[in-house]
Image 1: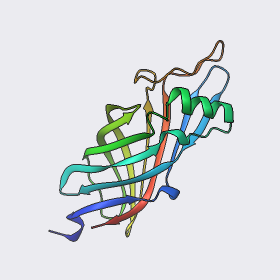
Image 2: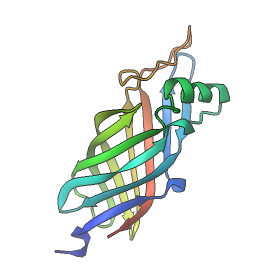
Image 3: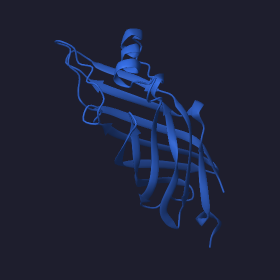
Length: 173
C-alpha cells in the first residue's frame, strides 16, 4: 500500500482558519466572522470514514456593529448556554489526492444551539506537502433549526445564513 493511503490527521490552525457569513436583509446584507477554536479531522484515503470535529466559538461573532453583535451572541446564539458550534465529519464521497486539488462531499453532524443536524457539504481541498487548506460554502437554516429570528419591525432578515468556511492546517500520519 502506498504511503499516502495511510490514516492521516488534518490538524487545524485556528489563527489561519476562518468562518465568514452573510445574512441577507430587507435594507442591507450583514457580513461577519466567527473564530475557529480548534479542530482535528482524521481520514484514510482507502476508506470513506472520517472522525474528529471543528469547533467554533458561538460568542465570537463580529459584524462591525457592537449592539448587533451583542444581540447575536446573547439572544440568537445564547452563547452563555451553547458556547460552541461544531461540525463532526463522519464520511466523505470522492477521492482525496495526495497533493494538489480535490473536491469531495463531506457528510457529518452540525451541532448548533445544542441540537445535532445532519449536513453534507462540498469541500475543496488543496494539499502541498504537509500543508492543507479545506474550503466549503453552505447555508444554515438557523431559524428552522431553533434559533431566534433577529428580524425587528420593518428590518427583516433571511431565515438562512450563508457560511464560508476556510480551514488551514497540517497533515500528519
